[in-house]
Image (cartoon, rainbow, N blue to C red):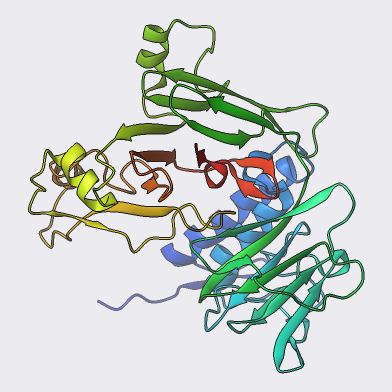
Length: 377
C-alpha cells in the first residue's frame, strides 16, 4: 500500500504529518542544535583532536545534515575543514579537500618552468590544488614550525637549490598524489632519548600542550625493558610502576620500538622472515618493502618493510577476521594501529620494529614525528 500524506486543519494552522525519515532527520537537527549550544564555547572540547568545538560541530552539520538536503554554507563562510592553523593540499590529481568558494582555491605560479607557491599566515585555512613537482615556499611565524600530515610520501622537503622569496623559512615539494595538510604548530621543546644498550636514539616532545587551556596537556615518558623501548603518555600507565606491573598495564597502549639482531648479510625481508616466522612465512602473509611509513625523515636511506595479509573474500565476522590476521602474525601492519620494520644500511647487524598505535606524536624537532627521528648508531 502506498503511503499518503495526511493533512488536517486545526484552528487557523495547516498541519502535515511528517514521514518517519523526516521525523528522524529533524530530530537529529534538534539534537545537534542542543549540543552546539552546550559545547560551542567550550575551549577544551575536542582539543586533543586539534579541533575547536565549533569546527567539529560545523563539520558534522554540513556533512551529515547539509548533505542530506543538498545544503551548502553561504559563500562567505569557510569550508567545514578550513581550520585556521593549517593549509589543505590537493596534491597531483587528488581532490580530497573542497572549498566553499572555488575562487578561494589557491593555484601555483609558473616561474622559470617550475610550479611554485608561497604560503604565509594570511592564507591559513585555504585549500591549494598543486600538481606534482610544485615547490612550496613556507613563511612560518616566529616560534612556529610546519608539520606535514599525509598518508604517504605526498609532500617532502625539497631537494636541490631553489630561488626562494624573502622571509621563506621552509621549502617543500609535491612528490605524489593525495590529500595532505601542512599544519603550523608551536615549536615544542624536545628531548633526546639515547639507548647505549640498543644503539638507537630519537627525539620526542616530553609535554604536548592542549591549545586553548591554561597549562593543560599530556606528558610523555620513555621506558626501556629488554630489547623494547616504550614511549607513552601519563594517561596510559603510571610510570612509577615496576617493570612487571608496567608490562601488565601498558598492553597495546603507547608507541614502541623493538630491536632485533640479524646476520649482516641478510636483507631486511629475509631477516623478518627468519625472526618473525622462523623461516617459513604463512601462506596468507607476505612481506613488502613498497611502503612509505616513517616518511618524511631526514635520512631517506633507511629501508622499511611491512607484513600484510592477502585479502580473505569470505564473509567473516569481526572476530573471525581478527583470527585470520593473527594466524599470520601479531606484527601485521595496521593490526591494532600502524607498524613497520626499518633497517639502516650502514648498520646491517640489526633491524627495528616500530609500532605507533592509532595515532602519532610530534618529536619537537624540525616538524618531524618522533619515529621519523629514530637513528641507529
